[in-house]
Length: 202
Image (tube, rainbow, N blue to C red):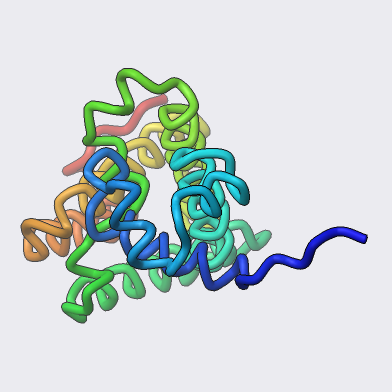
């Protein structure tokens, strides 16, 4: 009969997530993870394989609980303009709230700014997978909001909107006002694209 773990895996992942979120992957030391989770290094490594293994578990939970819950509405068929409006409004409200998580910014984009991404293809793959998923969701939301424009124009608009969202998430921890302006620009772009002020690609 296997030995039952003396700790709750979900609690450990949540505790580690808060440390990685506040400090970033590269700057988080194993000693900090030990303190936050209440586990010794040997227990962390036994359960997750390594610091990176624990980070990967944190990312999987972050994607499920934070990211995918927010972008789910963008994938609804024929959701109309309300879907992307709700998504952006929710993001603006979260950043403006000033909570510790809002001030910490985006867990994965924080990791993207660390030197470790250049050296670790696995962490880099986690980050690019996240941004790809985010871009696909925003493209779906834009598609529902602007079925009136051509496929090429809609693709260009989607890329602009995704870039603005990613920029907002990247600067949210240091400049919430700039993040809010970037998110406001998403809605402006969706509303005005093809109206003359924004180029139309045909």
